[in-house]
Image (cartoon, rainbow, N blue to C red):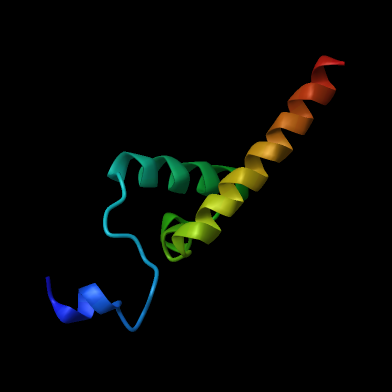
Length: 69
C-alpha cells in the first residue's frame, strides 16, 4: 500500500464510489422540488445534497400527513 494512503491523505473525506443511480435520484428529487438546475444540485457536496433530500422528504411527509387528517 502506498505510504500516503496508509498514513492518511492530506485531504480527508470524499467518496471513492457512489452508485450513479442514487446520484440521479438525489439530483432529480432536489431539482424537482426546489426548481434548481441539475448542474446546481451536482455542485453540492454529497453530504449537503443528502441533507436537502432529507429536508424535502420531511416536508413531504408533514404535508401528506396533514392532507390525510
